[in-house]
Image: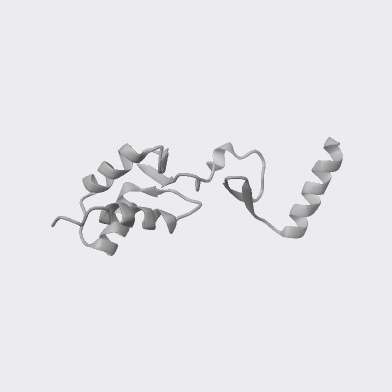
Length: 113
């Protein structure tokens, strides 16, 4: 069954916006879109994701996508950080014990300056 223009697109964006800070596979995205608008073929999802990457989406890994600007750097590339971080534009959200994080940041600032 054909979908209205933009219906699959909107469902893909909505699905990925619910997964901020992580990526989703084409299968996961297709499942979320199908729950929202009815059965959708994975090829329909891929045919929207591919041409809109890297404009709207970021390809995180093979068949793994995230909304552009809402990516989380892969764990392997983190440099000895015990907490998770999420960056969007100039803002950074840190998931950590706040007092411990403040002590760590204060120590880093006094060591470097």
